[in-house]
Length: 123
Image 1 (cartoon, rainbow, N blue to C red):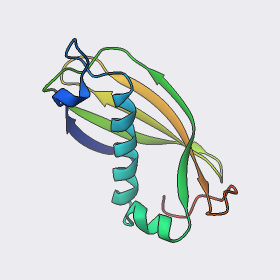
Image 2: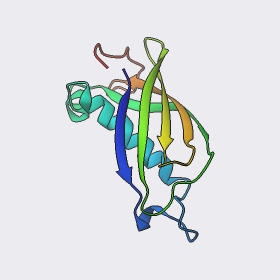
Image 3: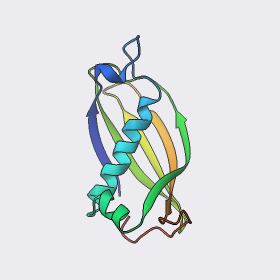
């Protein structure tokens, strides 16, 4: 199920050229991943209290065009399959009217014992 969330680019997000500093895109992607989990009906803190931890196993990012100061962008997150222990998410950041950034991430699940765990139902 596709999930969408919007965010505004603030001065603190940009470099000296007024574009989003590359590492800050990861913050937007992580916020979108957290909001997607929350939208599933159970906030991430509840998953954590039950012993489930969602860690990023792999991340690939392609930067196409920058988001700029004041832009309101949208992160679109779509599950792309995976396994019992990992889920691949396709995330696209859409700046208004200017291309986008793509990422694929494979979050894994672990229990508090740091061992791999199956993804809980409903995630």
